[in-house]
Amino acid sequence: MSKDIYINVDIHEKRVVVLDNKKIEEFYVERADSFNLVGNIYKGKIESVLPGIDAAFVNIGIEKNGFLYVSDVEKNASDFDRLLAEEAGEYAEKTRDEKKRSISTVLKKADEVLVQIVKEPIGSKGARLTTHISIPGRFLVLMPFDNRIGLSKRIEDSKERDRIRKIIEELKLPKDMGFIIRTAAIGASQKDFFCETRYLIRLWQHIRYKARKAKPPQIIHQEYDIILRAGRDMFTNDVNKLEIDSKNDFKRISRFLKMTSPHLRNRLKLYREITPIFERYDIERQIDKVYNRIIQLKSGGYLVFDETESLVAIDVNSGKSVGHRNLEETAFRTNMEAAEEIPRQLRLRDIGGIIIIDFIDMESHGHRKAVFNALEKALENDKAKTKILNISSIGLVEMTRQRARRSIEAKSYQKCPYCSGRGTIKSPSTIATDLARQLAHILSETKGREIFVSLHPDVATYVLAPDKNMIKPLEKRFRKYVRIIEDPNQHIEEIKIDEKR
Image (cartoon, rainbow, N blue to C red; front, side, top):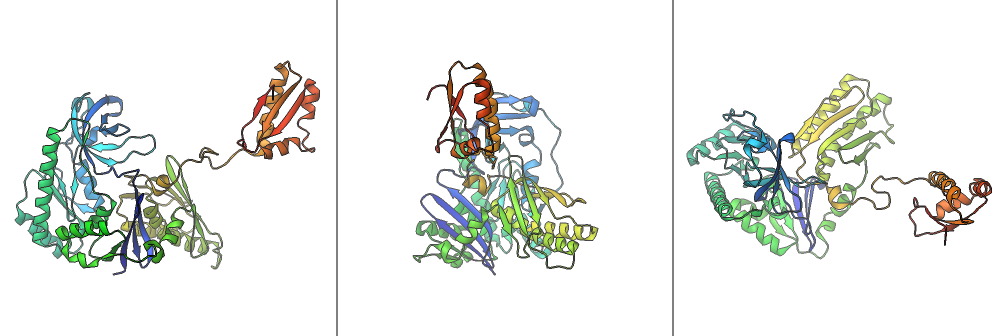
């Protein structure tokens, strides 16, 4: 085993890192001022129903109303299939009536609904909700409104699959509830399954009881924080150790493992050294690179990440990678390395939504196929659901990756107040040209003999440069004086024109 989990707990932030052969593979951050919402269950009230988009807005007591599509309200298999796909699973044939209905026939304003957040608010959009509740455990996910049993496809051994199926049959689970067996269930005993199914069923009964008594909007059940989620979802049998630098949280995970996976408790370690845990294991340096726009490849090539409101563009460049026989071979080798690194970066940055990858052009169809296969194989390790389209003749790959939360970059950065998020500002020559137009208009209308123009020093220097000759022609044309004032505190694009100083 070469996989390790390290958790750093500060007053304002909790960070979880998964290392594989001492190389960072997964990185998660949760801050005190931005609690996790995905998985929370609320009793909400319908604020409005919009037949035009077949959705309803639901007040669940947070800043923005959540939105609920009709497909997340109807009694169909959508959520069961979605969750099973996340576990890369198989499932029984659909048995429910999937006839489409209009949102207005399902819900009306002021209705009370029990909903769960499946996608947190991102940008101007509210949280996405579903009425198909799912309650995850370590080995199982309870689906109280479904009645099927699903088994993760990542459990590949046929004997193990048969063993688990037999255990589930012997447990005599409620017929009106569904369960998904997670990958972590490999090797779990009948007692493990028995204890967890009873725990999940009791938890659901408690949620249902609390929901009946509650007045909306109100939170009914809160999902685990990032620390217990790490213990539940990441700390599997293939992990060598989980080391954490907080004594209180060490005890929390220890109690959790005592209930769910006692055999893993001896792999849980409390970090006691003075040197910060992420510095001790060379993690901090690797995390710093997660925020870089440009990622260097070993071959000398590099990746460029550009995140926009609607999609993420990834550009593959050969850079200094010129050590091969010809251009085609250089492009192929660089693209192959990029195809392995890009999925890792997507996981690290938690990038979701539409992703466009621009590989270096390759003439060989065989090379394009090999790069696509390498990308597809590397994406198999991703817990988030992905969909990928074939590579085009010009090297473009379109793909989507499940997005439940904001990316690491979105959590850590804000829009630049200077350039308003454009990443660029107007050049002094462009601003000077704008100024000339404004001056011509104002000088033609003002009755005063002079006007005062306040500019950033860089722009003022450009405007007053003798070789530009921008002010004198205007003064001569309108027979008025233009006084230029430099203000270093002024935004470079700002132009202030006054008749009085």
